[in-house]
Image (tube, rainbow, N blue to C red; front, top):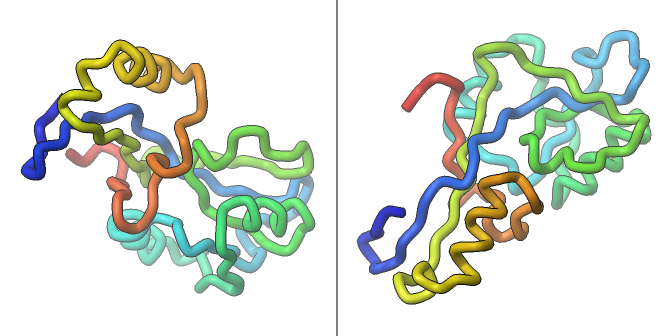
Amino acid sequence: MQRGAGGGVGGVLLEEEYALVHPVGHPAPRSLPLVDWAENCTSYTRDWWAAQEWIPAATVEAEDDGAVLSMVSRGLGMAIMPQLSLEGVPDNVGITALGPERPTRTVGYVTTPEQARSLAVRARIRELRAGGAKPPSQIVGSPSNCGDRPAGLP
């Protein structure tokens, strides 16, 4: 746990990879239009995207990752999404690794020092680190709290 400047404490829960998400069976998924969403991370991920000649500019921007997955499942495009957004995808959605230089993001938590000492919070943090439950959406990531970076960088 680390203490923040505002008195909160926090730490890292996990580091997740981004993957290419596409309709299963499509002969050339990288040729599909790109579907993106407003809460997708920026900075390093976008820099990685910009260096990939095969990724077109977003054709459609959706309001959330569920809408993106729905569009991909209907064959309307492909997306690049973080692992936690891909829990329980439909059978008609394929997930393809982006290779060793793929972007990743760090998912963390922040709480008060008092709550950090509570048994309930400590148990929940252990559960989340072990992968036993999907974190609440407010800690998964957004442009304001996303810690994405290319794999292998500090």
